[in-house]
Image (tube, rainbow over all chains, first blue to last red; front, side, top):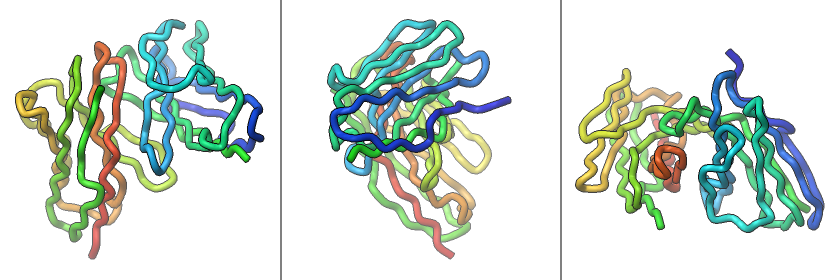
Length: 112
Length: 110
């Protein structure tokens, strides 16, 4: 079966712009989580959604937001981009909880 | 808050056994997971421990001691393809939140 699909794979944006990233989970998976990965900070949890509800949120500013649709697909949005937002954004899906999460290949965001 | 500590780098020879330790401080502990990530790749799930003891999956084993807030990943019969970063992650938030350690880069040499 198909894995977790993230689009786009690469993105270049200008400071101050906003960006929307998309994640399609594995079929049947209802939990979707988002992570930011940078060389300096490692893998940091952004938020997690289950059945269109945010269940957990990490310590990121309000510029970072997300949502989940009824088909479990998820999007995350970053507004007013800053240079420090340049990172690999990873999405992970799981059946119900995150005891076993399956990651997508990520979206590499570069802010210039 | 939550914190996890694991060594930044480990080097071992092909065919050897290596142990990557992870100590953590957290509230609402649910379990400990391990993930492997090759350069340029996505993290892939290796194991999950909710209870004390050893879980074995092929060449990989993972151990958890909840009372010591400690776990480790044991890799046996090392192969070159095992060269990657290995992350421990505590599961909290009722099983819904993963907090990752900073990762251990494993280099397997001939």
